[in-house]
Amino acid sequence: MATTPIQLHPQTVYLPYVSAVDPSDGEFHQMISSIEQRLLDRVKEALDEAGVAWIDVRTRETNQPTTTSGEGCDDAQ
Image 1 (tube, rainbow, N blue to C red):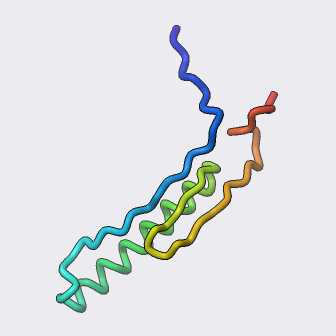
Image 2 (cartoon, rainbow, N blue to C red):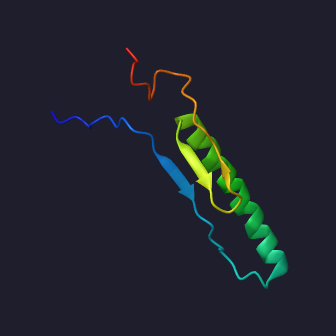
């Protein structure tokens, strides 16, 4: 049975800036931007929980993953 190789080096996810709507439509743009921000926040939380580093290229915000469980630890038994 084939096994998936364990990746031993960290990964960083770059969260891209993508404008989903025409910025000239003020109210609609605000609504979509709010939804987009909530979605990005959820993605960041999920990446944090998974111990994956990420960089938000729009805000230059980054995280440093911390491993609090055995997942992702090279020395986990």
